Amino acid sequence: MQKVTWLVTLVLFLGVTAMAQDTPKAEVYGGYSHLVADFSNTTFNLNGGEFGLTENVNSWFGGMVDIGAQFGTRNGFNVNSEQYLYGPVFSYRKLSSFTPSAHILLGAIRGSQGFAGISQSDTKFAAAFGGALQFKLTDMVSIRAIQADYLMSRFLSTHQNNIRLSAGIVLTFGKK
Image 1 (tube, rainbow, N blue to C red):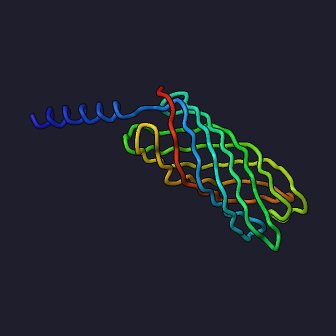
Image 2 (cartoon, rainbow, N blue to C red):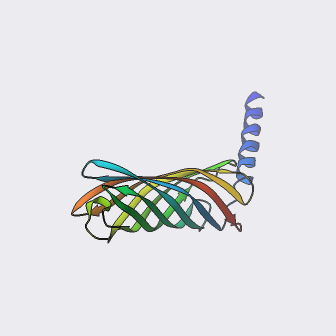
């Protein structure tokens, strides 16, 4: 009898979890962004913002556009970095209160004069590998507690191993 009770409890619990997994058609994200930029094994910090738009194909897969811009000062130069990235995002929506996700983004990074030691503004290939953790507040609003990315760039024939962190608000639209 105890096995049957555990089985019924498990089935009911999984059923509640399955009902709680609403998948939005689209998610719009905006928030603060911090870039720890790397150049020849020295780092410098830039602060700015990040914007993202995700269209979900199903409960676990979608496409994400990510645009970030950070600003700061390095060696007397006002420098900035802008990223324009796109790629797949994989979400785990089996939990009702939060959604972890992972993404692989490819695109371009634009560095201003002085960024990574470059003498004039330049645009290069970039790739971001990372993930995010969102906490649901209401059906339409979530908090992205953290999005962390390894952001690879290549200026002056050397790799830059940058770290980009962000946090902000996510608005969700529609249901899948």
